[in-house]
Image (cartoon, rainbow, N blue to C red; front, top):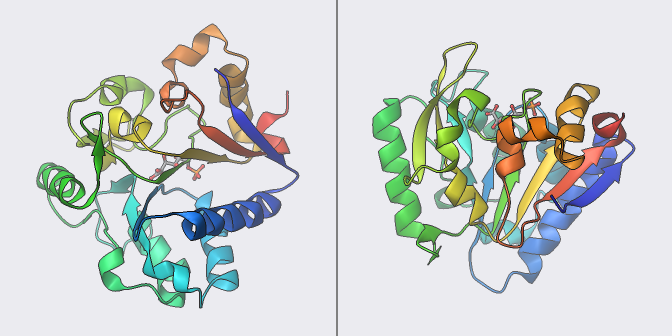
Length: 239
Ligand code: 6PG
């Protein structure tokens, strides 16, 4: 798979560069609203901290609408809540209108929230090819090759006809609500942020187009142009 690959010495260097790239995307965006869907997990924490530190007073937050790629179905006060983490690291420190923040409500019933969130996306986002279009989707990748909450044992979520689906973490059994593969692949820009040596095995399988890659959800993420952008550190692509 052809990739736009950006390699950095450290997670800090990656997060700084991506923060600048994100804000320049927002700045040059012609529309009044820039719709970005963000992933959870630990990798984006550095990005949120840097955005809060360097862009706290930016007027650009007026046009940024934050959505979630996926959410763990727990209340926002729980440490695993993807929304709760961003609220603490970023939203509590920047001048962003509350109506620009569109959390998946982890305290709700998974099936009801999957439907409700799909409705909100349908109402607020433009559509192309019959699917909503996010201006940017920021993804992580698990060390099992999952992305969003599309796990290797739930590959059907890559081709679901729904905007959101309920997923189940294969180890913990935790319920998640996730964007589906067709929505993710319909985004104008898709960027993976992947750091750490524990991702190297799967990342190399994907970049080297090894046969095993077909079983990794992250390898099925391709925008129309077929090229998600990968922001990785050296540890994540060591052989
Ligand atoms: C989640 C994420 C998930 C994450 C990967 C990588 O809610 O857990 O959306 O897809 O991006 O598991 O997680 P780390 O960044 O913690 O390695």
